[in-house]
Image (cartoon, rainbow, N blue to C red; front, side, top):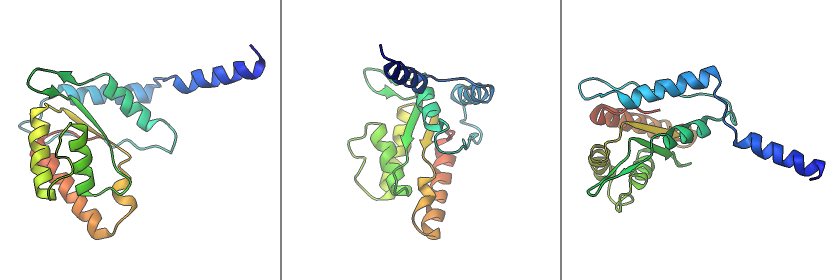
Length: 168
C-alpha cells in the first residue's frame, strides 16, 4: 500500500471514529436520563446542544438515536428516540410534517397545522416517544419573519406542554 493510500485510509478511519470526551460522555448520560424518566406529571426538561459547525452535534444525535432503535411490535412501532432533521425552510407546519414522516405517518403532508398537530400528538403517544431530537434547529429561525418565528416557537411550546416529551 502506498503512502497516499495509507493516509487516505487513516483519514477515513478517523472520520468514522467517535471520541467520548468528558463533555460528550456527560451529555450522553443526560440524554439517557431524559429517556429513562417519566414526564406525565411534570414539565419535561429540554437540552439545547450548541457548537460550531462541524464539531459533531449531528453525529452525536444520530449515534444516540442508534442506541435507542425503534422496537417493532405487531400492532405498532415503538420509537423511544425520535430523530428529526429540521427542514431548511423550518416552520411549525414543515416541522410537524417532518416529525410525522419520521414516525411513519402516511398522512404526514395532509391537513392544516391543527390537523398535523393532533395527528402528531396521537402518534407521539402511540409510538411511546420518550425524547425528540431536533437536528439543525437553527433552521427554525434562519428564514422567515419575526411573526413566523414567534408562531413556530409558540407551536413548539404548546407541543411540549401537551406531549410532555423532552426536546433536544
